[in-house]
Length: 261
Image (cartoon, rainbow, N blue to C red; front, top):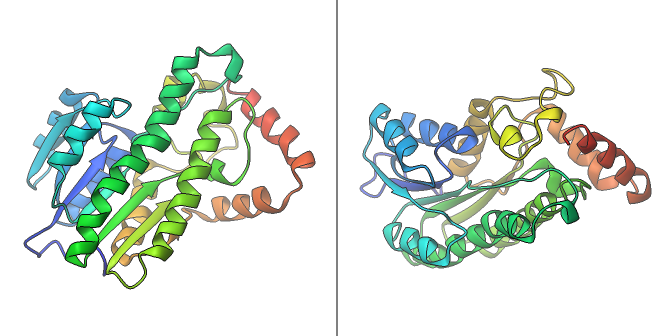
């Protein structure tokens, strides 16, 4: 079991993007299993409120992970952790040219650069100790290009490829890297990213709760699995994304994401 037992002396897990949505649900799931936490997000007050609800030791850090200096501070604080959950993310529905370049760069820096930097800086400590687990939160959009959400989907494709390759590289070290690829999940990201039009599309069969995703994700992290695809619908969708010719798939994904904007 790559992630040490919550009965171990070292049982602290870093969770980024923990102030709401899937990140908050993962923090709650880990706490329910007895893991102490370092929680990171831009909204420190939300983290402090969450910490007061959890019956474990919790350290909170307010940090914008698009900032190199803020990431360095988080990485220093997380030195020695037993596990790392890279959940912080941003999205932005609409055509890239209709957004300011700073907004698209923020999506890239949060979803790809920050995840890479945190993993790259902390994984060597885990390997040196011979135990530990990394959980990277990707997306079902990793398996296909998504017009009207191009930068987000591309960053999640990076997360998927990087995480799976790293998992294989870590084989035999006692450390694992798991990537969870949620589909549509009922969180606040849709409104924040101007994607409210797509929320609820497809009904209950398509949508999951953050708690469902968190439970399967943490199960996979504890077991040291390479990938987690929560829910049967997402497993089927991922196959469609992978094997449908792009000439047929791109108009469909464009039409679906068009509902959001």
